[in-house]
Length: 339
Image (cartoon, rainbow, N blue to C red):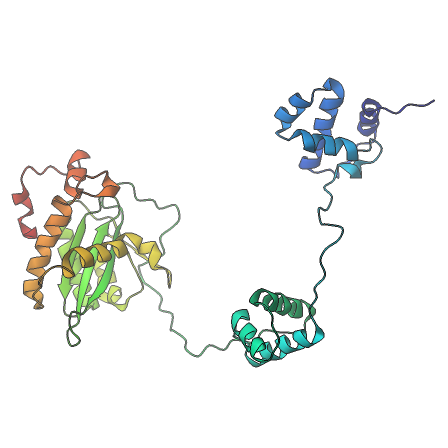
């Protein structure tokens, strides 16, 4: 009688080793070999981080003479449910989708119901995918009805992935916000926030142009108590031309966001919401630019020097900067411009 054991099988495999096995399959072979040598399932399972059920499943399937038994096999069920769609339903979905190619499965399901063909939105979606795979349904070509002229920025670039703000001033986000208290009044608020210290500077202008954005940059450098190294803005026209030139002349790196991505300027977007809720919605404001800016300077002082910030572990931006040794201010009188 000839006996072929697992141990002898491993000897056979070492003599007829194939390089077609992947790392995953080689690990299975090592696990089975360790089990054949030690007969210790706990050791094998802890070493290869598998369950006992997995180990016994490998042992049951493994044939020492056939390396293909180490390979992954399909886990697809032997019997799968076949669709029960009627030919009438498939043709109805096809015709409606061709007639209204931009409509989704929910709308088509409603139209089918109006025709007496009851089908869920999920079923309609499956039929649409089935028709696409067969080539019976093709998506229409999308024509662009408006094109925007791409303007090459002479200085601004996209923020590199490796650029990380670590200190105050490393990245200041700037954005504009519409202030429309009455139908015939429209003002533009320029908002800037340092992403590290949460220090804010806010100022209102009658218009948002490259010239007023450049003037706001003067205000920003005057009111932020640290050097500004980089600014991030969206693609608004006010951040072109003079604004871009001023940043270049002053050695301030200018980053511009990709289209339709305001979340990348999330710090200043949150700032706009905070000042809306904590100032505009509860304060009797003057809608003359000079007088409103006086009120905003006081709001800026309260925000930077009095209001605790959860993101700063309930320190104010001023306390955060003093604690980090960034600035040394002993009296709020040094911030008199904020009153």
